[in-house]
Amino acid sequence: MNPNFLDATGLLGVQRDARGVVTLTLNDAARFNALGTEMLQTLQQALDAVARDESVRVVVLAANGKAFCAGHNLKDMAAHPDLAWYQRLFAQCSRVMLAIHKLPVPVIARVQGMATAAGCQLVAQCDLAVAADHATFATSGIHYGLFCATPSVPLVRNVPTKQAMEMLLTGDFIDAATALQQGLLNRVVPVDALDAEVEKLVQSILHKPRVAVAMGKALVYQQRELGMEAAYQLAGQTMAVNMMDEAAQEGARAFAEKRRPAWKV
Image 1: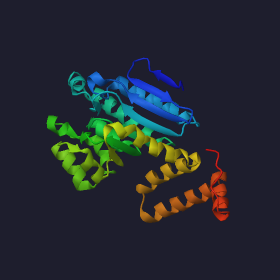
Image 2: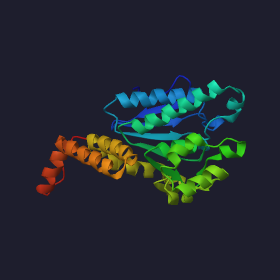
Image 3: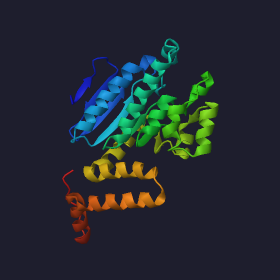
Image 4: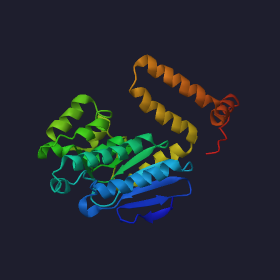
């Protein structure tokens, strides 16, 4: 992965530092970083590259401009009144969301502005989310006769059902403080503190063994879809395998010897 570049379309900035932190920056401010086919393809390629690179530790998903992401471009959608075209678009978007879900490293949304419809979906799909205190969120498709069905998938897995249904049925905006209270966000800070707050999460993750983080992320999402008994079986097996890893063995030795673990992270 090229450490610092704008992709050929100019739609996505990719930066990678020496620690293995990759920042993907949506770069179509004039169209509010809408998730058109080109943007989705570019994001998919970047996420696929991250998935193949075992030296990556954390991904930060950011954006340039006033909006984080306004979701799909309804003007483009109106220009293609074709069922097959719509099916391809939403399937392409779902693949991007699932790529975030399946990455073995945490993905942190750095939300500097408005996130609507599939843009709100993008925030909900990330593992962690930090927002500026002026950021706003909505699943606003219903205003235009389009229920935000695909955004509802991660939304109802982050936000209590009645609050999610209110967002989906009304399309009304919520502010960052409300999004934090309802579970869509982890942290809310003034915009000038946004980078520092994201960095706090990054630093904390970087001090943990990559293998444990990867196993943990996969387990949390997989067990959530299971019944209680099956979830405990899967969680127990995951912890047993995790304990066989050298990082966990070193952690156990360090605990017994009352010292800090000497991990190769």
